[in-house]
Length: 562
Image 1 (spheres, rainbow, N blue to C red):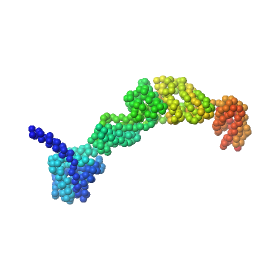
Image 2 (image 1 turned 60 degrees about the horizontal axis):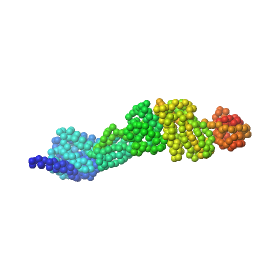
Image 3 (image 1 turned 90 degrees about the vertical axis):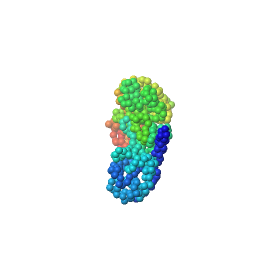
Image 4 (image 1 turned 45 degrees about the vertical axis):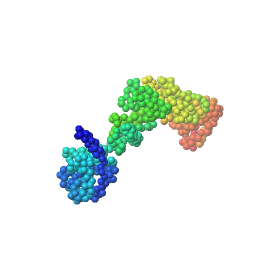
């Protein structure tokens, strides 16, 4: 019974002894350098490997080449973070004797003999303070920062002992691990905030990383478990378009399911864990500027996925793949650039509008296609025009939810997004696609104050997945009620006048064309009700015969002289 009682007590005392930090020492090595255990190594976050030896020890000699090989490899693997030192236990090992031993064995690490104070430095390890002393060589590893002692690391052969030493060093100085932050297109992701928190919340830290990151140099994460959370918040509209909403609708209807699992992650724009029509609603609110982020995602605009689940530990990290929320087509990293020469026109007739009056502006399709989606932003000059409504007689389900009228108050444009993946429309060239209702705030030509705003890429999406960039093209609407044209003088030198009668006031476009039909002068003028006499100064044009047009209609010919 007495022995059974003493055994647990001995184990408790032995555990306490093992946890005792290494006693400090100061030695002068055989090369004449003064070296202090804590000041030069432990407090500098370096691992110290001690070999307790003497120069005529046969096992020490057999270990020597393997120790040198380990020393070389550890210094290469952990530059500036590990040091070896030999400490002799023999009074006869003076500096000259130690130096001769180092040379004979090809050892390059420092060593101290009796004349340098080695006997006092090794005494604690021979005394039993850290466990039974079994003779030379005895290897001791001292931890960086704490001075914790790992005593008598010993294998069944020199090679096995070196392997155990290498493992102990690796446990104390894990080799720096670098982990990736990439998209599913293998593009590095920049400006990612890495949040790290240990289990129980005892320690947390955050830092910024781009493409890669590492946790190996954070001491608090050694011998600890922790969570890693990447966060990236950018413009929610980046990579998101109505084309993505069309793709989501096609996936939900099983017309064209997602080809890649990451697309389902991107499509979950309300962060519910599933892909539904609510995600389409969420995405359209962002496109139209109703919401400035994804309301169910806690302000995040990116999601990060790791193949490794759970918590990391001991300075390790995980590789993460980043997904831009809403970017189903991958445009953020793999933009589908479209040749500008393939732009599809939206056609409008220019006209003069007068302050205080309301007008209906038809917008016609300039191309035949099977339309599955559409987005654009109608830009205005807010001091000259206000959009009061947009409607369509050909787009199913087009209503006030397809545009955001309030956006023109702050951004001077009205964004529009329509999705018809389940009911694509067969458009013919020249078909009335949209009807824009406006109120004029001053007298002006429509073409001067209404256009597509680049804030939202103007695109049409075909049923087969094709994307067509859009542009607004204006044609001139002839001014009605003009008569009695006359040009004088004719021939003219430097300037001439055109006289005409107008049945009402309004704006017109004057054009001067050469004999090849090239416009050499274009100028907008305002007519009053009744007789008008307009001065025209052609400027630096060649002598010859020119045609004058008013709102696209011929008004006579004029000969220009030098």
